Length: 230
Image (tube, rainbow, N blue to C red; front, side, top):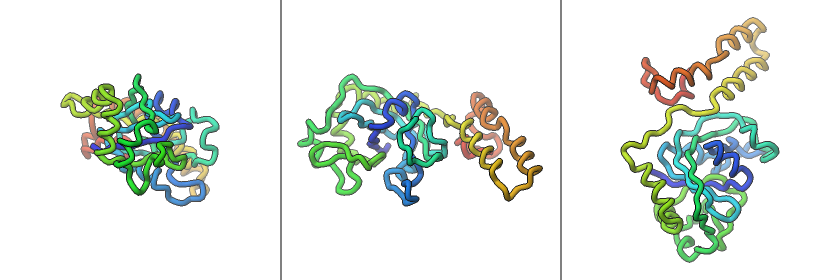
């Protein structure tokens, strides 16, 4: 298990209620962003601490690896410069009754902050440029201790042998629609080729979701991640 910190000041409600994390793949200028690259390192069963409005209002359990997905429509005007296609990770969030304000506990937290890619300043405020960043086990356990039983209960869910990661990544229908639009705009193909490809793809996302209600993996290849199956 790894531990993550996500700053969700702009999109907390959308992501927590929708059960996901979403980030662009790169910055608006095309440069790599380490806080977006971290999305590709998240694995099912990892613990995610949500930070919004100076407090930790929720903890989540990652349900998937990162997969390509359109920018959520519910983001509205948030992130006007974000790219239309980014990384998405499914997360089962639990909102907390006890919402710890890190700035009030910096004596315990500060010794465990990393020198690079820290989620918090020395005063305990969140860095605006940070979206997702990794936490050391020592820092994660400190936060769990501050939050108390609610956090320990979430951690116990992951350690429970009966806990099962959700197999189906959400947003697949939207992704199939994106691919269809990309084909429609591909002028390297003839009209006949574009029409044939679009007809072949139509309904694949819905079909995959229906099949995965009965199957845990592809019977031919054994591949479990549905977004890798075409």
